Length: 241
Image (cartoon, rainbow, N blue to C red; front, side):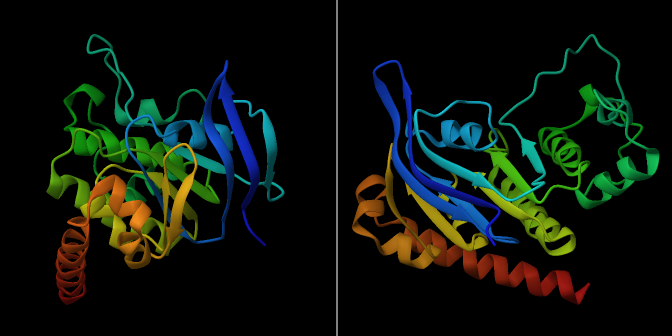
């Protein structure tokens, strides 16, 4: 049974159609990446799925008791506000020290609980946001361009952490990204969005699709192959340690 089933979804802001006739699903333990140009409706789709935006037509079916974890593009923390990572993760709802420690470990920052939020690097900050999303033991982890502002090695490391989270916790992952060279091979399925679904399928299939190449060019196939090589190499290194 799918976690999410979407049929013929339309979202309009006034007279402007942002999403048209979207039909898709998310299966358990699946990693899906949504790619598309700026203004293509990617964030709108995520926010509609979690219920933050109302849709005009269509059906969204969620499995009973479905738990979401959400990692936003960015979150502003006032530099004048002294708050530790542990305190940040206990807001707005109380979480036990054990739950916070587990979520930090799964996010790859297990030693950061007593650090000040304003002292974290960009990559560390995003991993703390990931830890926060994991606190509710989600069935579906949703990431909206969560590596925006990170350099390429930082982004690649973050997405490898996401793969580990899926492996260890068994959650599905639905993410939006503009970093085609990093996310394509890390995904089970890619959905190419431009107001409507242009194409979808396995990463290699989508990279060859004319609709995808019309938006992004054909050069991403080479980047995909390069990432697969780098990813396989680092994967072997991880197991060798």
